[in-house]
Image (tube, rainbow, N blue to C red; front, side, top):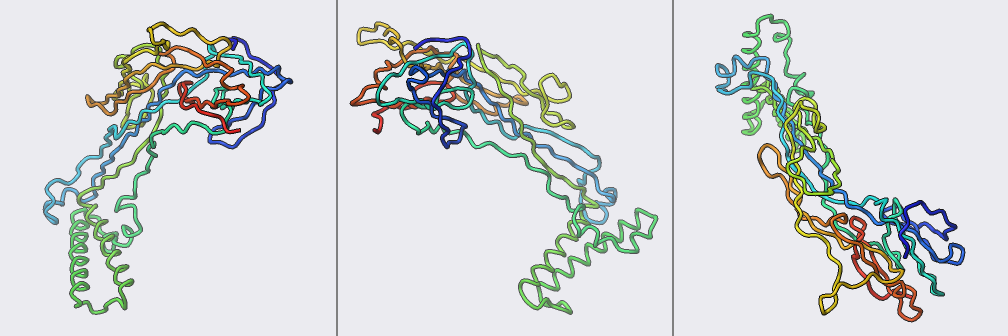
Length: 361
């Protein structure tokens, strides 16, 4: 193995393979002098923020809500409030320019490496790829239509309400319409309606329409409330401990914004070192030397990642970080042995060994 700091251009025997990542198989052959180049990753931490926004709007007749509908707390002023609903912490690998390597794998068995995006190694002597479980990320959700934004809202406006110039009179007419709808529902339920629906499906359709019309009329008194969510991911590559760094802000008017946008309240990130990766030792506690020409991989360190918003811990997770570890290696003879070659799966987020075992011939 040779550590290289410049981009290598070589005649590589490469073939694409099907995988979740855009990966290709590169075989060590005479054409490339049995040399294969790859780049170990540094670990990036992804903070996915799901923010919820609640919009309240007063109804046209909110002043008459207590009088006609006995509603004591109608919405009287428009408002838009924001909060952090959830935070998801995950990691992925990005190439570390300072960790480029050229390995020589000369063997009649034609050893090969699977290289992923950005030249990060995924596997040796197998086309399988380590299945690193990632958390399910939330999706942005638009606001559902309010009762006043449905087709039923247009149906409940009578000609008399349209012609009246008095808000008090329109409120009285709307209230009468609500009680008329409630009476119609009762008549249908008790079977006393003059014209009953012919079957259950028609009955449900009529009842749903009455419900939608009543909700629209009540919303004219009580007001409306709607919620929607936004989702945005912020990426940080920690090089040292981080204490309450503002990584984003949540603005009621602008949504999830960058840290330097002062229109919203802050979301804080802390990264605390738990341990650093260490070189392996033998039974005597002596540090093992790096194998000659070894296949380089990372032994990562660990950190605790915590996200706080509005004085509340929203998420905390222990993660492996390549940059807080060390680089070690496996002897290339493990992969070129004619009788019992081995395979290796890399963790794409850290460059660590995820799995190793006998290669299938």
